Length: 165
Image 1 (tube, one colour):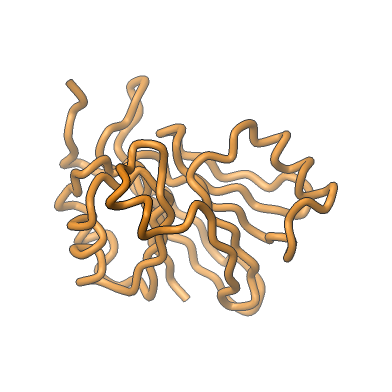
Image 2 (image 1 turned 60 degrees about the horizontal axis):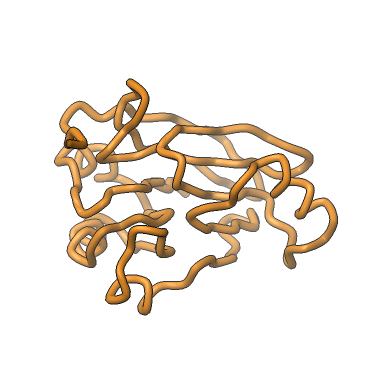
């Protein structure tokens, strides 16, 4: 299964996303969506799972969960926008605060791409698709899952994005 990961669109969706995600089976949006038009446009490409983020107003946040947990290709995934300190969150998982225990945590908020295994859990942040910070490129990710394994992870730098003013 090929999954497109996106976060922190803040109401803007770069056209590059349509090329990057044109052959994905599912899209995960890790919050700070901005408005429902973003999800509507992504759904033209593939089904979308989404959580709300800290900039999402009531009309978005009231219709989406804060976090979701689901299984794809035998990989247990937890998705939420802001997980705080990654090492503390990994410790909370190890302590047993989350059931079922996630194999992969998909998050956003930082606008910084991240992919690292801590303990038995992969932490994945696609960065910001529309408003990168600190000189980073706008980005998304593609993850390939099969039979309980992450076969491939690819960070995609976007060319056409929106500069924050």
